[in-house]
Length: 254
Image 1: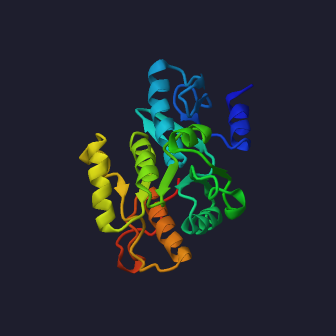
Image 2: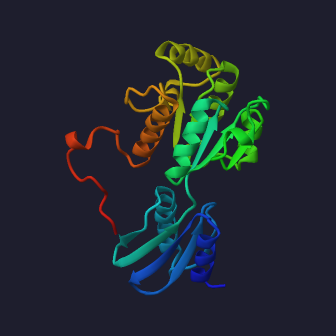
């Protein structure tokens, strides 16, 4: 199977990868397929160019954008494909149901995790792709681990579950980690996590209290606050008002 055909199949199956094509250079039309695990097929003509191109492919497939790239006198086009991003919600609470609804509407794949089986009922979360009644370590394994396109929202207010989920999340390359709770609760959580060996740099990854400052009162408004922050950080924004922003509203396309 050609690299182009394999890339087409990957896109159809909802996989993640990048097809690098030489547009200008010694071997115009040469292609190399790079998968999320680093596997490559095809060559652009030299090991050096393949290695550099694979680096661009890895960066772009996870930032989820296709781009032209110049390497010396060679122009490459890196075409990427990727599945919808995931949101793993810890805590089968009312806020989780609202967050799943909004995440699904925004094109995300939401999942709910809670070891309390009496709460982790699929019927309560019809917008979730899956509801996992398990502790965080088992739940992560069942959901295929945590990758760079996974956001994690911890909503339980239960230190036993919150802390276990956060420790695992902080030791992963999750794109976003947020935790619900008052500032006082966050300080107590911080003390517990430090006691578990989490350092200051890791703690700084937690968005806590979770969400944007919208003055949210209802579960739906809280979900909007959380998704707003997740989407803003995913796009390297702060979530402020566009009326007060400088520069471009949207990134420039290829």
